[in-house]
Length: 289
Image (cartoon, rainbow, N blue to C red; front, side, top):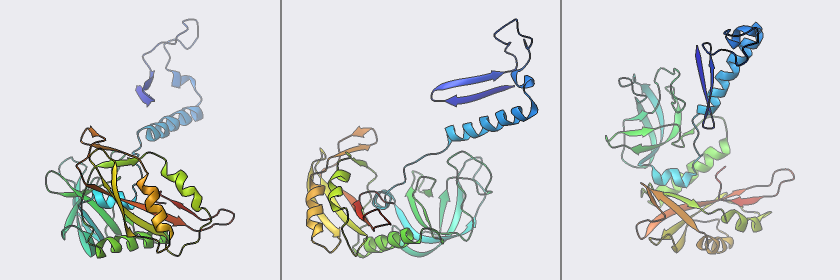
């Protein structure tokens, strides 16, 4: 038996054909696992299994609503009503949907899900969405013209958990729709970790609204041309926030090209208000929690 566990670029082998390193030991040419008590064998097997899951688990950043909205070709509140069998051996299955509200893109009758429709174990990134599940779908159109979703799409399941986030996200999507914000840009932008320090000055502030959305217009070298308010806090701090955002610095990546974008490229950025909790003061953050 050969067990292979990948760990930080190194491979660990346990092979029953390998002799013990010390030829004087009594366990020479005896598999290591056979020298262990039964309970230790079980612990070893479970440890290897759990370790391998942790190493190969699918990980992706939790995207901000502004990011996933801009990068998606289709955004809607919908219910999965029918799942179809996977196409051949691919981890991709068709799902029929009923749309209750569309925020971006054309009206669809079905989407494709990166996963297994039988709910069985697939790759670490495979997902399964049961029929009658209501959610916010963020889908991208692939080269075959199919609209697909997956583990890292930023799906929002509409259930009894985290009701505050669900309400806020729906409010923001309705606002985008009312202001006809429907452009798509799949460039990956990253702020250079200075904005959060500038937002620390607003600790303890009291606001009625829990988000502000602003639009950045870039020059081709990522210098900021302009910042405009899309939906602010309806408070004098909006102008102060715009001045802060104008001073932010950004990097970008798109199809192998770094820090170079088409002139007048636009990005939406959200600033979110979190109320005081116990001894923790209220604050503003660019993180979408």
